[in-house]
Length: 300
Ligand code: AMP
Ligand code: FES
Ligand code: ZN
Image (cartoon, rainbow, N blue to C red):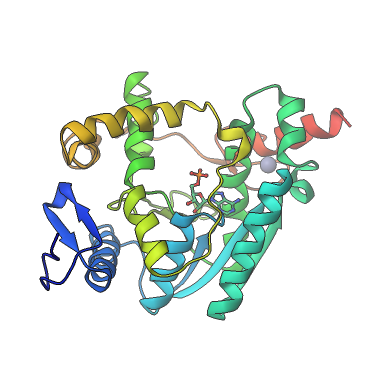
């Protein structure tokens, strides 16, 4: 297999792009895709700080690596979910990465903010752990960005994540979720920061290859609570479709973004208030995060 660019020997074939690349040309391809994402959705500029939410996994560390290399002013944010060894090890990877690149890393502990770590939240709420966890992550990312005076949070969501989320929303026709499915969400309230996903054009396989080529030490294990999650089933389904017809995932997601998403945009946007307890944005009076921490406190 030869590199499409230089005709040297290729390390990776990308069937959906009808291309193969050697290591240096793959890195160049990867960075181009990130650049294109940032440009197309005007995610951020070189004149502002970017808060990069890092989980210690390949996607978010690959993202941080590219942004540093591209000269962006980044700060990392690690949310310590308190999920046993998984959190201990993923935190260590983020700290080691930040130290090796000489970039700042902010750490926020869910246990300090909610009153208990994710495994306890799971018991108290008797809901899938990912629901309380996802809620806390979104809230704490926004809060950390505000505390740091940073207007934009970047996450490592990739093409597979985005296609799987879209697939899930479409399977259940969650029309409320569809307009929010975007590589860039603008700030709709002074207390809500922008959220962007610069890796949305790159597949999980590509972020893994990038992390490998760049020798990034990341945590391979998934969160122990992720087992059996529907998002994983959706990813498997989409992978089978991709196998049969390369580019299927890309066409599904990009087709939605370009052709279908505008049809789901609501004109009568929800009114946003400030939570009477914590001051963060909510559609009600007390936000879901404050309700969650109340529930945790009540349970002792
Ligand atoms: P996930 O929802 O686990 O697939 O993660 C999606 C993205 O959310 C990751 O690429 C990170 O950017 C961010 N993220 C997930 N977990 C954490 C964490 N513990 N701390 C900071 N950011 C996270
Ligand atoms: Fe949130 Fe697993 S429950 S990362
Ligand atoms: Zn609140």
